Length: 411
Image (cartoon, rainbow, N blue to C red; front, side, top):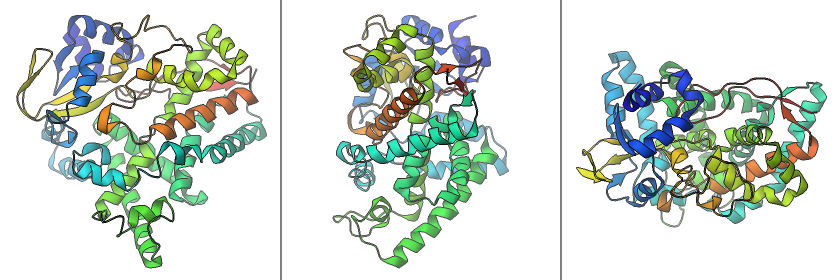
């Protein structure tokens, strides 16, 4: 099969190719490091991906203006177009889908809450949540147990605590978040479900906004108050639409959800690395950088070409969507020695691009690292002999990678 055809099938969600993206990525890096695949130009080498992150003038973060969106919209019937346009309006107000100066303004409302120091202050809370979840697993008597009990719920519960989502509504929020996240990862192949979930989330957030504004809580009291503040150091307040998008971003884009499961799988398949971590638990924090490099959750992000230009000599047209395959960049042998080997002692793993690079480096990077560290630490402290129990399969997505369900035996 020709390389271009394989790439087309991969991004068309061919299950066989999705099972092993690494072989395709390696072939693309070697033979077609920049390739037009459907409505997007796919970029797979480390240096090219990093340069595109850096080039904010030539490549816009306004991904909703690109060819990937316009082509998808053109394929829909009128009723579907109405729903798709509603969902794209969420993207318009997404903090990660804006350029300066609006990106700077949006980031200002949450930067303090997501600083490294502020996130480290959440360590005790996150550890308590992780232990509570393991208590639930033990009380259920399930062995093996579904790791999503912890891998999905821990990061989600930490964010919900920051957003002050009542316990009784967390399950509902999670169902909305799952549909919205799938939509973001597949260009809304679940259009009806994502539309319904986003409408429900919007109604909830708007009611929360009205309640908070009625209370008159000032900026600085907590994250939600900062979001609804009208006097945050002279910054133009967030609109209602921007607030809905901000909630959606925080509830759906944390890649720690899959990273805990992906790391457990990687260690289970490599007993030498698991043994090394058990011998020296202090390796866990630096090992997280290697997990992010080797088995990331986020496989690609998008930019839009501002004008006609070239990427490594490949012509790109104005308005074309450019897909930066960070998972491929992180296994580029030109940047990382023996890149297809998991090495939790790797000295340069921190140069992985899982969180992006430059001014658009993921705002939630420190929270994701904390969630992954706490989740793995508590799991292996509670169940030092845990192992993957039986077969599993990855979700049918190309942008976010993680198992649909992962059963874990405690012994």
